[in-house]
Length: 242
Ligand SMILES: [Zn+2]
Image (cartoon, rainbow, N blue to C red; front, top):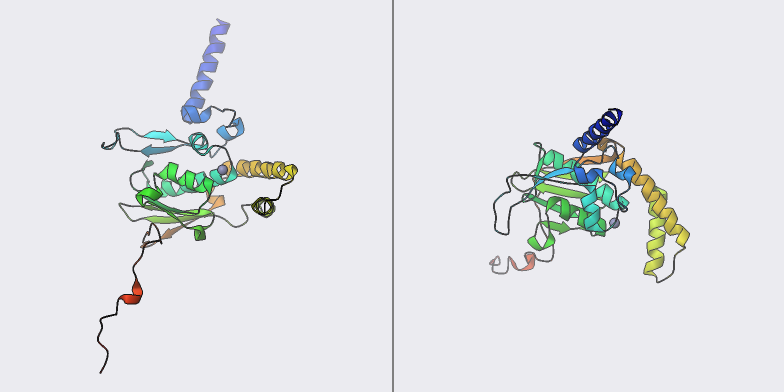
């Protein structure tokens, strides 16, 4: 009888945990530590897609989260977590009903591995469909627009959230490697520790304390600057004054 009650207790506890988070998101793995899986603000996103190659809207939504994003991107890193939090908060504003329509989004991102992977995976925006603009002037944030409404937000980290010491160490390591020089392995370890501390902070702080989100009015999305209008010929046939 006692064993039965103990079993019942564990079933109850597991059930609570599974209900509070999407199943898979709750389960840690070697690439997804428990402190990330259980972090307070690590919550999944509900997304809606189409059903087949030429299909209509699916009748159900899916839940995707940081664990899925890590599997897609290849590793857990501070850039991925920053991007995840930033994009998730903007999507909350664009889809107040809580279900993100991944067929209805365009975005602007800087050219960084973590940033582009995160925004493509979470919004469905992609360069080859002219729904993702790569623009380094945007910095460590995004512009995201809901196509059907034109509603647009720009998101950034608040100043001071990203540790200056970490920026300096990142810059030092990149500079050495781009110059073909070797780096001190201890510097890589130090940077990874800093990244872990930052991720812990980001996933356990209310997003409003970390992020700056600004609404952009009448934002005109241009997917790429490579093609444009040639302005130096538009007046070629205008008559001269006599
Ligand atoms: Zn990364």
